[in-house]
Structure formats: structure tokens, C-alpha cells
Image 1 (tube, helix red, strand yellow):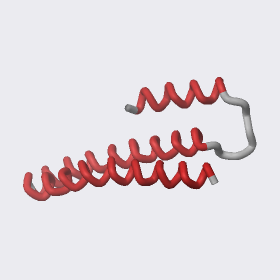
Image 2: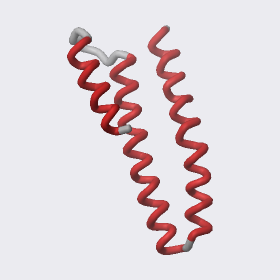
Image 3: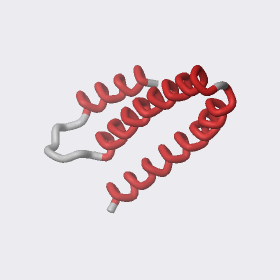
Image 4: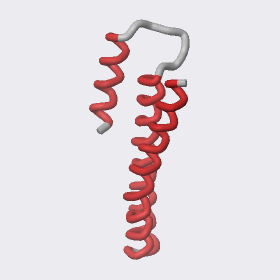
Length: 86
């Protein structure tokens, strides 16, 4: 996912004109990078919890993350789209 985000950023950077404000493509890229970073932190936390507290709490956090990350990503992108289309 991270490699595809970097490729997307380079493609957008070279194909669109430079403007002094953030476009929807810019906010989408920034949001996606932040979500990838947060998933990396979540996986690290799950691993740490698994090693220190056992499998059950780690599996609960993993189950929560499996639902929360995609749902919140879609919600944030839809909000960004609605704001940019105003």
C-alpha cells in the first residue's frame, strides 16, 4: 500500500499543475499516508500487547482495528470530498 501511495503521489505531482492550495488529491494522499502510519502503529501496539498481556487482548484490539480503520478511512474521504465539492 505504501509503495502505491508513493507512486500515486509522484504521478499526481508531475501531471497536475502547481497551485498554492491543497486540492482533493493532495488531501487524499495526506490522509492515506496518515492512515498507513496509524496502521503501522496499531500493528506495533498489537504485537506489544500480545507479547506482554497475551493473545486475548491483542485479538480484541485487532478485531476492533479491522473494523475501525476501513470505516473511518471511508468516512474521512467522503467528508473531504463533500468539503472540496462545495
